[in-house]
Amino acid sequence: MRFEEIRALPKILLHDHLDGGLRPATVIDLARECGYDRLPTSDPEELGAWFVDAADSGSLVRYLETFEHTVSVCQNAEAIRRVAAECAEDLADDGVVYAEVRFAPELFTAGGLSMAEAVEAVLDGFDTDLPITVNALLCAMRQSDRGDEVADLVVAFRDDGVVGMDIAGPEDGFPASLFRDPFARLRAAMCRYTIHAGEAAGVASIADALSTCAAERLGHGVRIVEDIEIRGDDAFLGTVAQYVCDRQIPLEVCPSSNLQTGIADSIAEHPVTLLNDLGFAVTINTDNRLMSGTSLSREMHLLATEADWDLQDLYGATLAAADAAFMSLDEKSALIVDVIQPAWDL
Image (tube, rainbow, N blue to C red; front, side):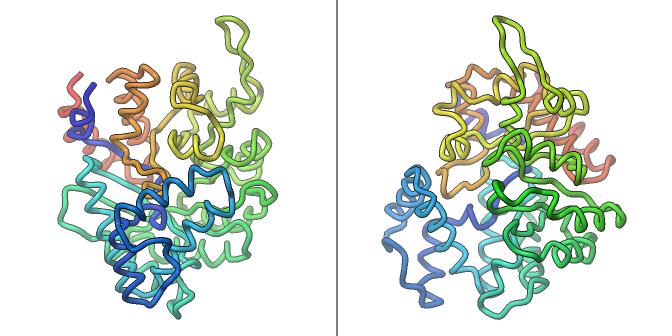
């Protein structure tokens, strides 16, 4: 299956970080405009390679430094609008027809913006005439104490393009249960949410997100494989894995990013293939396009060329993403029947 064939197909992206997807040239432009002088290079090609190398380094310090650069140049409304608009352009160019892009409003306030103003700027940038719908997920940072504020913003902007909430940041040591109250607030308001779990921490983190916060989707979630025992040709699911599989709780899997964080050594060995074969609700995503040097088409092409996924596997993941998306049932049906099915035409 050729890359361009995959790129031409309509796709759905559920797990993509706005501050992890800037164009290298834009980072350089915005740094120049705001006087930020800490970039490792002012050459776009070299800077793009630096971001990937830093994320690949195995050093948490270098990995976090990549976000220090991207966040630092997004501290005014004009910059944020540009980054959001270019995100929509890049995704549409990759064949994505629906996307939920997440960001933490609190990270865009160092220049004096309020969190609400940061959200407004992002939504302005996502408002495009391109053949794509881009909605926002608002993240609360796990290591801070602003979950209630973020939940209130989700409710306030629910009719303007914010479709849900997430928590991001260090998973290990900051369980989802710390945010049980904000998530309860969202449930009371009939708002949606996903929770990062099963990336930097294991099965206990996933269980915590499900049992105390009733996560609708799991950001990454791939370490659920630690609750699966393989004996010969048979797989035996533990309690948490069985719960996730039986209830078809969507997994927002980001293969290339997972290689950088050490979940697997190669795409061929990535647990997403086992999870897909076992019938889990697997969706394929990008996480941080800049840091992984990737796109959704590339992620799918890697699975096809290195893990023997066929068109039916990719189509199944696309349908799972449509079903898991935080949009209305009518919108999902129209997207599947009018856009996805005719183009994939299996």
